[in-house]
Every structure is written in C-alpha cells, then in structure tokens.
Amino acid sequence: MNPILDALAKAFRDLFQFRILRIVVWPMLAAVLLWLVLGMTFWDIFSGWIVSGLNTLGIQHWLDGLEPRWVANAIQATLHMILFVPMVFITALLITAFFAMPALIRLVADRDYPQLKRESGGNLAGNLLNAAIAVCIFIAIWVLTLPLWFIGVGVVLPFIAATYLNQRMFRYDALAEHGSSEEMKILFSKYQSSWWGLGLLTGLLQFVPLLNLFAPVFTGLAFIHFGLARLAKLRQVS
Image (tube, rainbow, N blue to C red; front, side, top):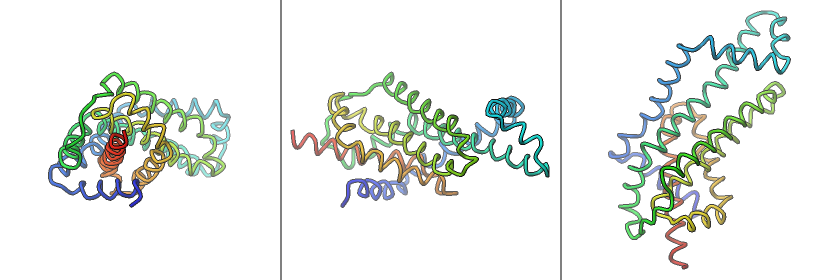
C-alpha cells in the first residue's frame, strides 16, 4: 500500500480506540470556546484591526459607499470569519501538538513500533521554535493573500496554508522522541513531497463540518504512523 494511504488507514483505525477517543474532540472544542470568548470580549478591537487593514488596502472606502448596506455588512462579517476560522484551527493544532501528541506517540509506538529505540533528537525548545515558525508563516499566508479573496483566487489559499502548517508542525512532533537529529533531517529531506501530501490530505478534513472535530488528533496519528514507519525503514537499511 502507498505509505501515505497506509498511514491514513492506520490513523483512522486508531481514532476509534477508547484510549484515543478520550482525547479526540477536546482540542477543537477548547479552541472554539477560547476564540468565542476572545471574539466577544475583544470584538471592537478585532473589528478595528480589520477596518485598518481594509483602509490600508483602499477597500474600506468602497465598502462604505456600497448599497444596500447589508451587502457591505455581510462582506465584513465574512472577513471576520476568514480570520476567526484559521485561528481556531491553529489553536486546536497547537493544543494537540503540545498536549495530545506525547500520549498518542506512546500509544502508537508501544503497540506498532516497540522495536524502535528512542533517540530524542527533538526537544521542547525545538518543538516551540518549530511551532512558532509554522504559525507565523501560516498567519503570513492568510494576511498577505487577503486581497486575493476579492478576485476568487483566495478560495484555494486555506488549503495551501493548512497543508503547510500540518506538515511543518506534525512531522517534527512525530519524530522528535524516537529519531536522532540526523535521522530527522534525512527523513524531512527524503520524504519532503510525502510530508506535504499527508499535510494536504489531513488538512482537507479541517474544512468538513463535524469531521473537523476529529481532524487535529487524526492528523497527529497519521503523521506518527508515517514518520515512525519511515524511521524504522531507515534503520533497517542502515
């Protein structure tokens, strides 16, 4: 079976185990709750930032003169959602990466890859730095490409951004405990297209209602299976 499809199939199988079901939904629910509270508390501030951005782009003046007014209001509400939704996804993925991934790695490794020696090539500092870079580039993609939404091209941008974020964040987490730093570099380079492919396929779930509740943990499981299987293969060859 194709390694990517094999990882996805194993992740789907693991998703419904009782020990994993306990941690499946809470990252997304926690992220939604957090941003609902922040959104209601700082609505005026967030709206002010959006208006400032639209003024910079020269769009706010056009919206102010747009009739009927409900069309302009709908556009502004859509812009709020365009910014709100990725913040929820980022937060859910970060919660999964920092709090759920260690437990997921133990469950998967102990059952499917017990022979793999833990080399601890990654560490907390590396994890934080990797996550910070991933999130900053993800946000930059959204912010810098906002004008493209007005010409229709923006429809594909969420998938590109989600793909980048998934592959950048979860490939490191999947290998940090078991791979050495050298092994991690080799696997990141050798399977670069596969990491991106896995990031795309798991990223698509983030945009499917209901299924997106499972997306963060499913993504983590898929990257763990793919990463540890590739690491085991690398060590066999060596």
